[in-house]
Length: 156
Image (cartoon, rainbow, N blue to C red; front, side, top):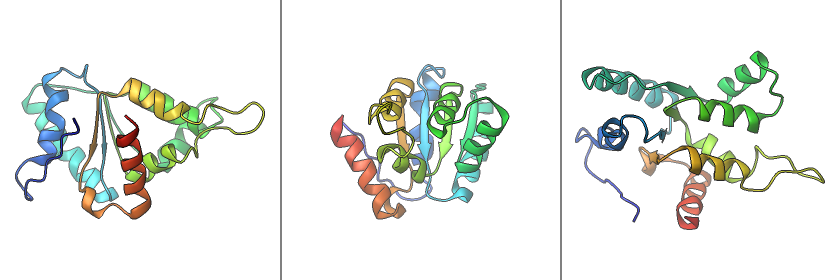
């Protein structure tokens, strides 16, 4: 069953989206998407405040295309898909925008050709890493992002 929280603004939907991870002691990893960079930063501040009150210290990252580029530049990783997986594996909480998820679902981060990757290489591993995917402010995602989310949840 796919839980959908449609409470009004200010009723704690974002906190509700973090609760399974807070209660699970970060054995329940969280991948949360927000439609704007400002919302990502705002949610990071709010989440860090909540985690301090809960005496939790999860490993947190904000991931966007510039973070992927930094990972590639600072390591020997030369593919965006490998950089993405490296970031995801090493954090309890990933806050990002729906574009990253859309690119995963559209196989932008997999190699093609004779030595190509399986089409679901990144998504299958994400499902293995994260216990929870939160799509916050879903109603203002753009059409391609919505389609990617719907494809992901109907395949599961």
